[in-house]
Image 1 (spheres, rainbow, N blue to C red):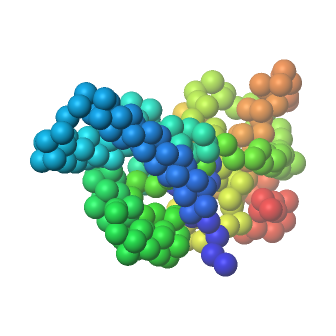
Image 2 (cartoon, rainbow, N blue to C red):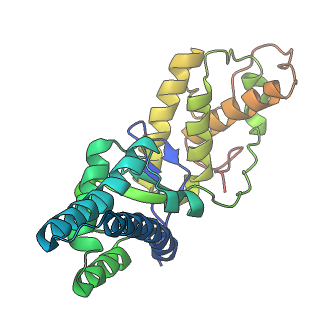
Length: 274
């Protein structure tokens, strides 16, 4: 079975959110449908109480209210609620763009119109289409998600253990002399996510992303990648030293010493993160 795809922003930062599956989305949709039905029922009762007896006028009002509730409900809540309807709030779901960003009015409108026409329309065949498309999608997307460029994610995911970032022994003295004041939280998070997924990345992607992160870090701390040191070891040393200082450990008061000069491979004093 293929690994679950990650959401990656334009800055190559992986968003740690799980894609919502068909079952949870179905329950959220059922809750939203019940709320919409309650609104329609309230309007119908109000019309009957008002004594409106013109069939044509009654049909026009009901059709208008149905379209307004069916389309406007999702558009209103997903736009103002940052991708969450009441049903999605109850299930801990949220609609986001494919790059992990928040949805806007046009995304919500496209999803809602597609949902009313194709995904969950009054004809049973259309609902079957929605289920089949969702099951065939790696991200459980329905037709509206494909058209709008969105995906539904699970916000309330179980806490996952955070892998410990250890200092490569060969770089401990060198890292203790670094000026890490320019290394921000966002870049540190990108490094942590890269190291956590090091073994899952394809070799070419691992190499390219590693060098990109090294270039960004080197520009912030004004210290280039030493010769013979793998990019991941450089990043791991920087991150481990940053964490040690945040916990109150002062940088080592040792003279600046260059790291050892092994052959540029993943052997010797360096072992790739597991």
